[in-house]
Length: 264
Length: 266
Image (cartoon, rainbow over all chains, first blue to last red; front, side):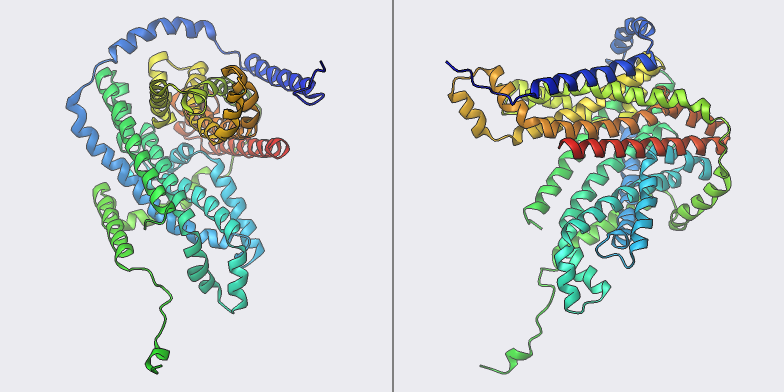
């Protein structure tokens, strides 16, 4: 009986080579940063004790948690709305098929590539250094990264879907504003809303994270609980954060679905 | 017919007006509530950004690049954490992804349990994971790797499971009808179809990991983030901005590399 080849010739050698390369990269990385495993094992022995102490919850902090959750939500929402307006404006200037000039498109895109590369918490540190602690700093920090994200994604959807409709409207003599308001916005609004929901989720997790470096909200409460070694409160707050993000995820998925199947 | 009909103006906007109006109003109400609740005045809020830009240029410039060579070990650490955690979490996430997907796991309870576990991992922001793990294990690089693994596993398992779900059931059914064992279906049916999506998601996870590994330094988990934090706390803004520039370069380069790999393989 003739043996029938399942895989194509040479593919075995190729995959062995790939695995070898990947393995080398991994071990090189481990070697380069020499993680202190010994110390980690020592600490691992303490971990069960800490964890067992964390296995309680403190319900007295729940009302406080709620008010702080509202702060985080409000920060995320406020910066989301402002970011949507700014990003709409910028993305129509930055999408290469509708931009008034080629150079503005390139200019905005490259600036935002740099802005997006700075992680939001690093923006947070810089904003706090400039404006001091407080909600305004949180607002500005989240706004910067949200505008960066939304401008990129909006530009992407305009460039992806806009091509033909722009040409059609141009041939009827529509002005730049007319093309945008009657052509592009109605066309792109569904994908915009999908991006906005994603952005709201990331805004929320950013506003929680910003609490760790000193802006208000639930993150700050958690940091305080951690710094005072209050195990029960820490656990409670983490559970609340998890629930909050879970509810938000459900909500955003529902909004996305509604929009997708033309329920609105 | 009648002449009146000719003069009718056809409205461009033919949708019903009530619903968008309602949505607009509720957004506006939420907005004013947020402004009120956060106790930031509208002017302060609007001036926040210009003020920041002004302060920013006054404080952070000119950059101070004297200690550039001292940053190199931190850069290597940051990248190393990202590489190691991507590797480990890829393997764990693949197993979890198989457990979550309906195509490969028929046990409903196991599916639900894994899905819940992954969703907990994913829903707690990574910086909170970092803070918690530093709290439990103390500061150090390995804690950073651990936090990165947890978060990446949460993200990747869901993405992997979705990609496995997208593989058409017909093909797997055909294999099953042939009498293939479970492992044969897995290795000859699922994995070959899954590899492009797998490469794509893994590269994406690597990008996220590099960013996250920068940020995790801020909570004391090692890497270049520690340097940013200490320099800003010591008011050495010129040095801080240099390190941030290094971070930007790292992240842009990572994106460049992952995009070129993606183009070649996917």
